[in-house]
Image 1 (cartoon, rainbow, N blue to C red):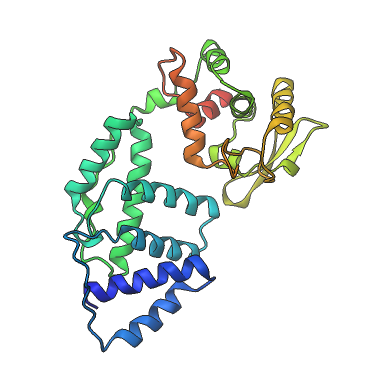
Image 2: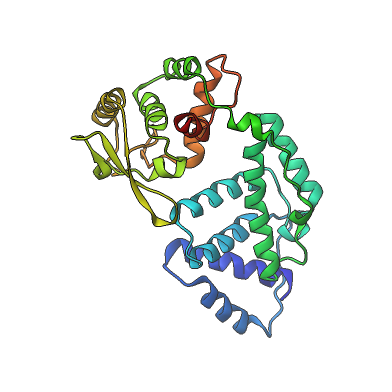
Length: 288
């Protein structure tokens, strides 16, 4: 299949997916079969056209068919959309130097921790690896992308009690206070906090039904302070979603993983806490 025909198929799949509930693989097979005897020529005059958005839609469609959770799909979408805002080349022309330049740029602009960058690299490896296996691109540029060395000892250092109090005091509103208090009271993972529904909270015994990895549920308990914060937050928050933590702007959708991480970074910047601050750091501090 020539590049123009391939791009046309991806664009058609993208538009159909946005409007209808379709099986991407089946529709792609139909399009490929019916277009096999034709050659498409693009009338685009652009010197460089990025087909990243279309390829991202295709990749997410495949992952959905594989049965990945909505939370995982959303994480892939956020990371890949961010990547597409920095790279403006056809996917089959992206090379290892583009990837290295991308990570150097976002590290300089956003001051990500090494472990965060490694997570972003894993998403791109999955993206390019899948496109290569599906024969969408001739080579996988992410093969030579190496993880950054992480100081494991530093990661395992829990927050001191004084540091936790500084972070509590740096919260700007009741939503941030509730998020920090749930994290330190329960030791929940980010993914678990994002899945909490209002119906999962038992106010009688200060507990939450948490939906963990692998479909395993468990009960966690929160402090009296956490209970008071949560009740005040739920009373004041806007939006009608059943999810506990929502965004602060319309349409007040459920909070995303990147949104949660930004909150922790924003709180940490207001303090002199030197160690890295993340939801996982609170989880380890809770366990310690």
